[in-house]
Length: 307
Ligand SMILES: NC(=O)CC[C@H](N)C(=O)O
Image 1 (cartoon, rainbow, N blue to C red):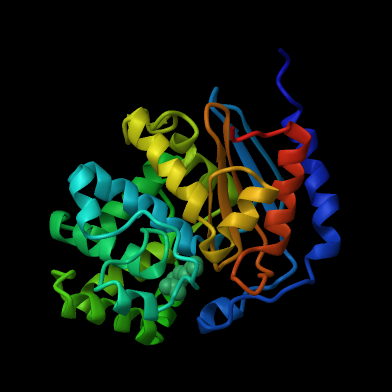
Image 2: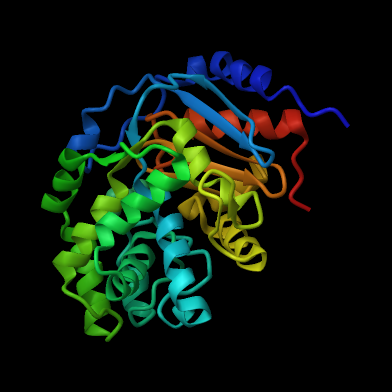
């Protein structure tokens, strides 16, 4: 079978999303993110046989925000395996990514690792096992994306830290239930640094290429997770990767994916490719409007089927 013309498909998304770029709004609850120009769009796709395609504002760099939660979980699973699930659940939350109420009802065990509370407790677990938690994460991205110059956007990380009250409340609540081991502010520093790692779309697709490739990153030549763990992680992304819009995304796009409030989404077709898209205009839930539309188009054209 001939392989699809991925370049033509990515190029076509650029034209298709143009009318959508003014829709929605950039995240403004983090002041440094509010300064990002809204009408930008980039997409990149990396196939399991190592081909790279990209279109749009491919040089543009952006912070990865909640997409970092997938790498946090990956590094934590490497170190804890199944025992990690004693501290965080696997169920969709059905609530906003920064909701506090569910955490109180559920005794400090976050629903899943892709909402803020879940990622913060996973960071806490990681923090206990890494001597240099911020540097280790940065190195993981540098090696997997193949660019040793990748940095943390300090302005964004500091802005998030200064406005950390809600995330700090979650961490303290978890501590009150005995589900938090380290200093809250130190773990939050690491969490915000992870969110503020700055990449372009191609680097992002490369960094997460192991998700479509049975856990193997062809750029770093590392087996990051077993094939089974990778399937399990993709299953969780399918049910919980887009906050309380995971069902809508599954319906429209049909790929496991993870979004972040900078307007980025990583999605995968297991066995085939990883795609990263970025456009800062967000819908009410906090997902990129143009990003979802582009992935929906790709999914239709490629007849992606999760089952
Ligand atoms: N959904 C997101 O991308 C949220 C990440 C953001 N850094 C926060 O903690 O609020």
